[in-house]
Image 1 (cartoon, rainbow, N blue to C red):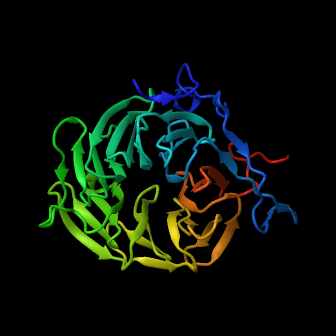
Image 2 (cartoon, rainbow, N blue to C red):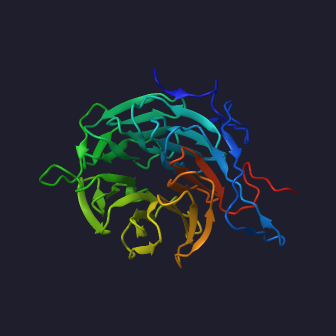
Image 3 (spheres, rainbow, N blue to C red):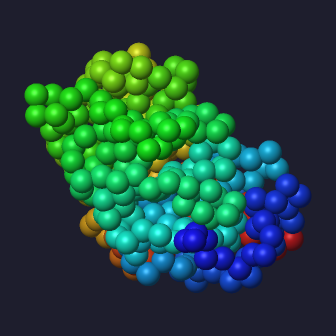
Length: 367
């Protein structure tokens, strides 16, 4: 049976009901990177500057394509799942410690998501499949076959997920019933050609409100579409005028971060407020809004290996970090807003502090 590759004989610390915070995985893959921040971070306690060191999470062997943090768990921790072109999605603890690798795909993995209760994970791959995984055992519970590359997946926002959305190169959005995994999926809002969208579907999110009845898609045709999942019909759309590269729903809901060309668009998922567009000087691969402050966002680019944080009101660059050795393909804030993760063409994940110098996780003060 294919499933986890890991070093645990029992539940890993972050999945144990009584975890020992700070415990390392037997195959430790987290270290402080020696690459400092470009410039300096002034300390609020003195005139000294703070050297910023990201946590380096190695293990992948090809470009990291997607990252998602779970919600905060009962013990205050959370998980991080990563997708990679090496075909081996990985699960990590809030400290960046490796928990396990999901073994079973035969092609690049483009998307990976975790359920609200963290008991399930879902992945979409270039091997024309989407897979549902048990995060405790690493077992592939079911494989859903497609006719082309699956670029995005989304689980419905219930403690135990019951439905799955998939989309990709077929330009179809499929709705699978996890309670009847062998049943034929439903296809959303087909046009006369039998398609849901006019371009490759790059991202899918499931609104955590609205009783889980609304989904949102973003495609290379430049359109963000809102869907009523009860009727399978499109209820609204927004044309951004250029191919969309990514879309993320902020932790806590409410706001979509959508990247297209050199612009980051922030959209009210309920469409009650006008979009906010921030033009940037470089092509944007991914953007993530801070879940609580909502005054800044982190973004990656294909133009250089730097991770940048921008002010939402002014659009000005607040911070820029050097550490990766290739373009930054994905970036995402943790659910508590204390950390953001970046994934790169260089095959590594780096974790950065929102407030450098603060004692948090493996970052400890010198006092």
